[in-house]
Image 1 (tube, helix red, strand yellow):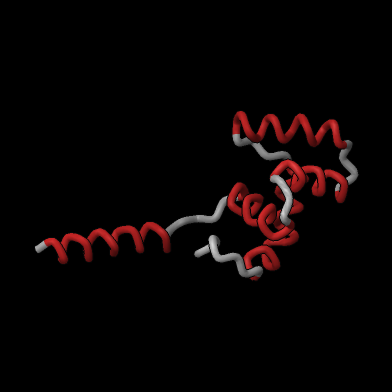
Image 2 (cartoon, rainbow, N blue to C red):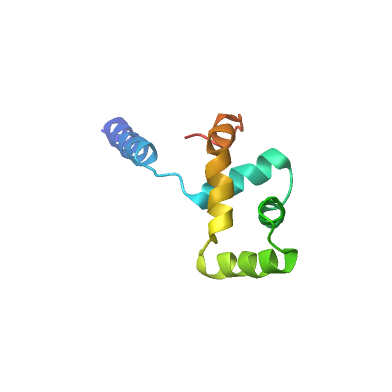
Length: 95
């Protein structure tokens, strides 16, 4: 009986994982692992690539931490590299 409960629980978790939509925060997290830097450094890199001043990236990072709001240049930066980010093998990335 316990075995059936565990099996059903595992199936529910498996379904939740396969239906999970990967967010920009997930990509930022994985990118910081790939680049071996902080998530803040990912913001600075995206800002540099898009001609945004570092102090503006600082403000945007603080806002993201507090509210989850991402500026367009970060989303664009992630969108441009999504395929490469997803293809990079990281053991903690199981999607």
